[in-house]
Structure formats: structure tokens, C-alpha cells
Amino acid sequence: EAQVTQNPRYLITVTGKKLTVTCSQNMNHEYMSWYRQDPGLGLRQIYYSMNVEVTDKGDVPEGYKVSRKEKRNFPLILESPSPNQTSLYFCASSSLAGGQGVQETQYFGPGTRLLVL
Amino acid sequence: AQSVTQLDSHVSVSEGTPVLLRCNYSSSYSPSLFWYVQHPNKGLQLLLKYTSAATLVKGINGFEAEFKKSETSFHLTKPSAHMSDAAEYFCVVSTLERMEYGNKLVFGAGTILRVKS
Image (cartoon, rainbow over all chains, first blue to last red; front, side, top):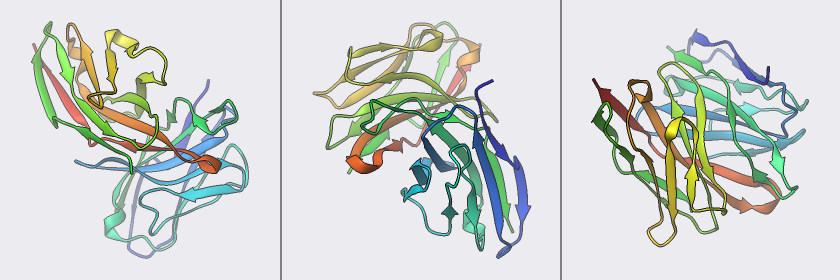
């Protein structure tokens, strides 16, 4: 079954304790992305990746890191979490059609709800 | 810069009546436009997308949207609401901001649809 998986689904942590949220897709998609969802703000893009070893900042990258060492995985790293990073996080992937960077439909993971105390 | 405005944060309709969710966008380039739906405690699912083909786009579950360039709008409609349509809906614009890095997605703040029996 084609899917995007995220782990963990729920996480409670304390300020400053490094954490990683994993994301994996089995559709051989080139493009992967992380979003955070906050009430009244919709989804905001944190980082995205066009392919292995190619990553770029989205609209709200501060406090986050990513890596893309393998095509299927795109972990999100919070080196020193703070309470303002309490949010619902979504990973997504899509293919790149036509070789010109045009995004196709994004497939979203189930979300990771993070609480930073 | 690109932006999306969903004109209503909440819409309430009775079962069997029409649904209209409004979306206006701003884009410097020819946009691709999407509507995604998020049911409670679920990830996001694509309803429909516009990518410069027909301006009237039909999606899943009886939804459709019309791209109106002159009005910079992409409103979502459905002739008859079902209880199962109750969810949050996001209008999304995808624009080719930097050719070498492909598209970015910009999400609207979301519209919560309530369907009364």
C-alpha cells in the first residue's frame, strides 16, 4: 500500500531535549516536505527536499533541521525544542512530473502531535 | 509573493443544501491550485486540483471548483451536502518560485464545514 508513515504519532518532551520525528514514503517520490499545523494558521512549510541531498527552507525553518540521505526518508530534527514548537506536524511527499519541478499531488502522513513543556 | 485567503473560517449548512467554500489567491506566476480536506484526527486528502487545463475542475465526493483568473478565485462547491462532508478544508496554491527548487505550497488558514441534520 502506498503510504507516508511518521513516527512517533504523539510525543511529549521538555524544553531543550533533542528529538527526531521520522518520515518515510514507499512511493519512490523525489519531493518530500514537512509542515506544521496551528489553529487559524493552516499548514506552514518548514523544510522541503527535491531529492537526495537537496533540501531548502520553507516559510518557518527556525529551530528545525532536516536531512535527506536516502530517497525514502526525511527526518525532522528539533535540536533544542521550545514550547512554541508545540504543534501538529505533517510529512508529505510527491513525484516531480515532467522534470521541470512541477509538483503533483502531495501525499500526507497521519501527523505527529508534539507537546513541548 | 504568493498567498491564499479563505474568506470564511467556519461554514455551516444543512444536509442536502449546497456548499460554497471561498478561496482567493495571489500569485506572481501561473499557479496550480488545490483543495485538500482534513477529517478530524486524520491527515490531509486531495479533493481536486487545477493545473492550467480546464477551468472547471471536478474532484472526489461530488466536489468541484472553478478557476477564475480575472477574480483570482478558486471556490469549492458541492450541490448537496452530506453529513460525512463535515471536515476542515484547505485551499492551496503551488507556484514555481525558483526553477531549480521547484514549487512551494502555500496553504490557506482553513475553513471548517459543519453539516447540520
